[in-house]
Image (spheres, rainbow, N blue to C red):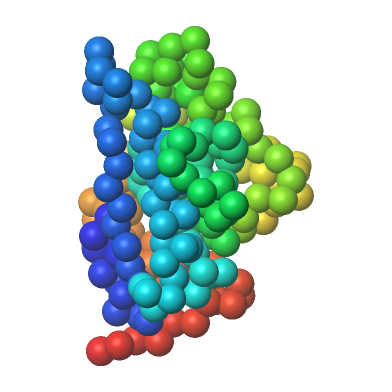
Length: 207
């Protein structure tokens, strides 16, 4: 995600790339720990907004693949929080940019084996409700890792719930299509900018 973070920083934003505990079989690091870390990161950024020089009401959560799952989880997975978090501080982002995210953790999607019987708790597709942040969703139709059908179903669910959700479809695009080809990458940047400007975000090139 560093190219996207650097691009944001070059346009007047504070770009932050957050680390999180990754899933490791037969250890205490489950996908739930990954989600907790993402939600903790949003809370930390919001709590330290003045120190970091950013607007706590203009936080955009962005991620690709598993990171996209964590980004949307900051808005969806209420209650999956680290015990040390101050829950009075919201971890809900003000906008979401999701790049080919893990969005359906059923057997038809991705991640079912990692989550086991608890897969429904962390399936964004099943957690859609009204009042979610404006969302920009990218997904390629030929994604062999995270099935395109899940992204399409998520977009439909978001629209049915009256949430703002723009869907950028990559025809014949594989997993990570906008990160593997220069033209697609530049197009993605333009689409992100066009999505955020009407929401009140200002792009000011710093060089």
